[in-house]
Length: 109
Image 1 (cartoon, rainbow, N blue to C red):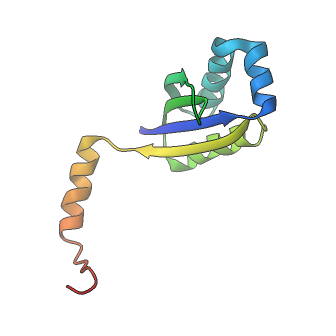
Image 2 (image 1 turned 135 degrees about the vertical axis):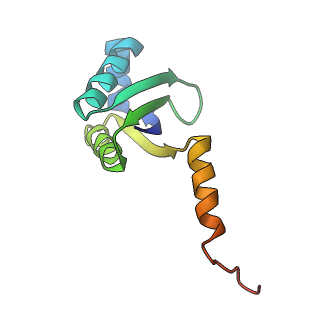
């Protein structure tokens, strides 16, 4: 399964839900939504700063990750939502091997 990092900031509505449900309640909600789409929450942390929450999830594919982002984004609980595809070192090795034979030439070279 592919891994994703989800970074989000709560909207006012989302903060109200956090206060009402607590961190454990919000984690349970995220886990249920992820599971319904065939994925799994690997970790979830709340933070100070620009983003309020960081979640790493496993999902079958990019389409499933996008569906998760749309489902969460559509609720209005997030003022900011960002999904980042995470690659293993082995996947980067595979990409490096493929890029070596790409024939790409930088401008001026």
